[in-house]
Length: 466
Image 1 (cartoon, one colour):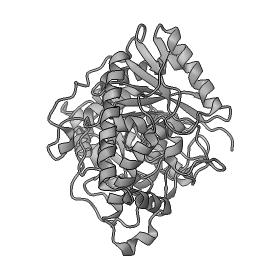
Image 2: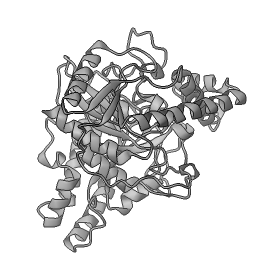
Image 3: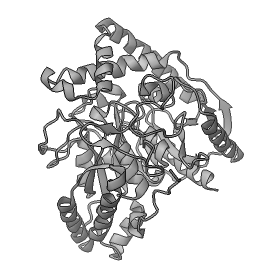
Image 4: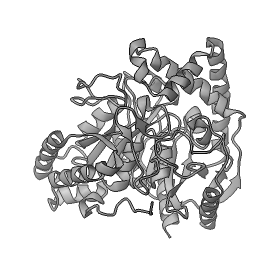
């Protein structure tokens, strides 16, 4: 299958960022209606081959875009993102939409309220054009389900876009919208960002409120996916804030999201994490990322090798992820379980085998690891790593064919450790394999430091484009 640039065929309106759109709306050189139409046309065009969308809400989006157009005309826009076309993953509540969690066990009926992140985007005037695909309950880092089938990578249709926010990543890559809401419980934003050559940001835990809470607990985050760090930062700021329905946010306040884009990385102390917590690093990925690190060093950044301060993080993550799967399965009647993804059932059974004592001990181990990571991010301004240890592999598989991996977690060793520590992490593209598949570069910061991480990501975009 030949290399294919995902933006080939996307018109000019599908390539614009949020800031350009806001300026055009203000001067009335563009209408939110024509932009929404272009984004939905693009979504329908690519969905035939890529299967990234479960629902395209043409009527609702055009009505919202028309209302946005009137506000801009009257000088009463709700925000700088008023009229920006946005997609939402099939795992967050959306008023009036059927949210299936990628599962045949979930009724096809409209929801009566928005999730907090969705409500904040709606209040700011974002135009919801479509719903994007996810694997069943978002349980794995590839995107396929019995309900909606396999989603495919726009760079090569034979390959997976990753997951579980695979549909959102495809939507961003092909220009079907500007903002794309994803979720990340073990890499589900950053893995597909890496596989599809876009920007994906997992925020500090609690930065974006969640309701209802994920069955996977406090490893699960909600965040932005976009074609640029600037758009990701704007979307994150729009979605963020306190919501009293989300007790897990805690009572404290996180640092504000005001940011300078880009930030000067010269003189910054940066730890280079190059050994995944599970699996091995593909040599071609290593070569591209090493070259990217060399370019970062050439800007004056002080880059040093670093290891994560813990052993057997895969086992620790399994205690949290597998028990979350068991909890989710417990809500589904026995009669409905025969239609569920067999891999999810296996993971849930493994989770149910852990005792309550096992889980409490794992929570203590996690606290020790998280504290050590906080201390490491005092010593370093940022950590960097490959976005993933391998490039995209064949669609429809949980692990690469003929690999020794048993579960997706085993090849996701640059992702899930940062869910355990709850720190902000952003993936940006840094190059391509010889076969034309994207390779991602991850930058990690201290908890609460999302603004600086996104500013650094914007700097890396400039550095890697030279």
